[in-house]
Image: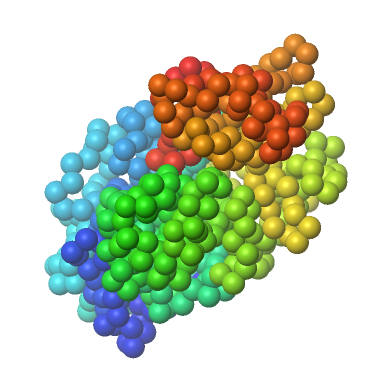
Length: 505
């Protein structure tokens, strides 16, 4: 049985700060009250959607549903009409939870809405259909004591979240994350990062992904700490919150790049980052140049971790470990990890292989997709991540890219796009870089570099970049083609959309 939020029923935590979004904040007592009202209404719903704006109502709605043992489908407010319609039809939520007055798109107009109040004395916390499907006081899950809250000790295998994947190879699939996966990942991170209820986390991540919702919001709440959401990321917001007592920063490489760019002219930001206990980057690889610029300016190194929607967190650099640029640390406690080559055997030292994992952190399957679920696992129960990496002798993992798009087979060699990208980013004339492969009649595939130049009017020439990579890595890893672009297409988590590059849009 899995209780996710013990602090919500601990009277000693009632007056401790739990959530802050701008100038709106909730203590644990206030969160328990607001989430408890939601929980009493949705109890028995099975599955609800949450319109996941960066606002306290999103956190209250998600926590309230989880207290009641109801699975949550976080919806991206920026989703296109077709994608949103697919997610709503596939997940079939009983209702959608929204902040009061929110106007929803057409795909959700047939779904009953529940308006969530984030105020501790916000009345019912429900919209026009309040009471429909609501549990009586004292029922299972949340409720019972006025505005107080009691979380049911739900089965660890019961669904907590259904998070939809990006859909790069077809329609988005809903990964069903059970309660035990949330608890296992967050507790493992707490152990390796020495993360406690004394920590104050600041971030500006979206709340419809695992990074911002599970790690960045549910993580602090599980541990009894505080989360301060910036609403919209800014270096000014980071400096303000870290300078006002926050101890940890979560971000994606795009955010850390902006921080690195701002540091030379912002002594307040330098001081704020220097005083942080832990700086964490995830969702994509942080370029070596940004690692080094931040470390040189602040004396603090950014640590990286590796996870995905279906697995939550797999590896992480420890708080007291070596923050080695280009690596994502060793496997977390309780996570099994292995590399497998194309023949199904373990690759040799320094060779790449597909990363496969197993453990309590894994999802239970894709909603309504038994065939896709079966294909995602090996016969002996390991999840095929689709990521390729290298295992260092001390157990650190280096991710070199996605098997489908980032493993380039050229002239008999297997080349990871990620290592070539890092080498390119170390060139002073390169602002951003992405690497793909394309067919070559002689080599099988050739390495193609997509480069955003520091000075678009005077970019480094292709031969210079090829020689730079050859000297840093090996001659066979040099780009044979260099294409200059004004910017790289990225998704909302900062990952480069390589198919948009190779397909011309």
